[in-house]
Amino acid sequence: MIKITNFLLFLLAFLKNPKRVGSIFPSSAFLARKIVHSVYWNDVRAIAELGAGTGAITRIMEANLPSSAAVLLFERDRRMRKALQREYPHFRFASNASSLIKKMNQEQILQLDCIICGLPFFNFSKTMREHILAQMIQALRPGGRLVLYQYSLHMKQTLAGELIMENIHFVPYNFPPAFVYTCRKKDNDT
Image (cartoon, rainbow, N blue to C red):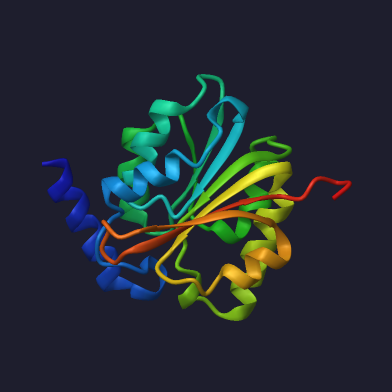
């Protein structure tokens, strides 16, 4: 029942605004596991998921979180965000990932140890892409990780110019197939 409901929520959001959702299907379990396995969970005290959708990644993420970790979930679609709020009332929510720093300030979170991001950057204007990327870099602590999944390699050069690119994994068992970028924020002395 949950999978059908999640699929319908995702489909409705895609039909309403395909440029903001980016895919007709939620992330597969294969993709969600690859993303979650890219995070050093013992180091996580504060984490954000940008573009949480129906919670395909959030469910696996929650099982790995240290109990004291602060979690920010960003989801633009009101219906999907409301469903996530019902399922994860102990997490903090916001609708617009471009206000990441503002939300962190409201929640008194100084820095994030990790950001998981599935925003469809390919669909965004250059200005919006740059703004959100700058917010993510500012939000991460030195050495903090960004795990970004996209359906192409279009962000490779941009990310490599701003962060330390640790690896890129191709996940064929997703529709569409996806690339998982694992990056690290440069230390202050790097």
